[in-house]
Length: 322
Image (cartoon, rainbow, N blue to C red; front, side, top):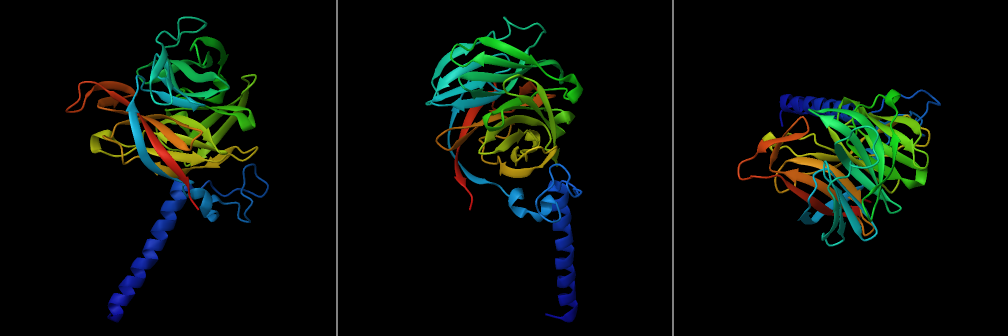
């Protein structure tokens, strides 16, 4: 190789290193934490980019099964049961995907403020937790935490959200029993935070900022000490995939580093990811919609070859990475 070409190669390598480092920092860095700052890393620098392990996926995933369901918003699992939420429905299935019960009028009793929309859900201790709201033309109001009986699907109680939190929409909810927390996520620009409530009292406990935050967050679920997020950040018109992200919130932290966990490039047709959950037998279940064009969070028309929107649960077998 000529000296000229060797010099070009050296320069190219040097430039690539700078580009890669800059890209990594832009995607995942949490900023320079001052010594003793809340949420700072135990590393000497206190910087997330110096701890590569937290920036990598925790699991590998193999799509092993899928089945259609009657709801387009969320999915949750506990024991041998699976629960699915539509915008205005709650349904219970067995582990084989057989429909056992549906409540198609979940807002009729027990609400003092008008609501018309359920997002992603969670199930804990035989109760369904849902973030509900009045959702019109991409804007939400009257946000509440609603708790339903997991067997009868009837409303048991509600908790108001904290308006001073800054949250202006609720796309999903997750119960984290180990910390006694209920987490709420948002599909709007306020989705750069996760919002935390007390599992027992419903009291607002604060928020955690996501560095760097995904766009269009649709669902949240707790698993093995981490929170997993779905984001409808791919453009279906361009066949771009959506993604799943992961964060681990340290005790007392006010921010958390976001890691890309899975690219959803193996779905039948790119569409809109919604909620997710984890089963006791080591699977991740993801609710995915395809066939409808989505504008401001609402279905508007259909893609070629479809005359209705298909709602599917995708089951991924999880293997912990070394």
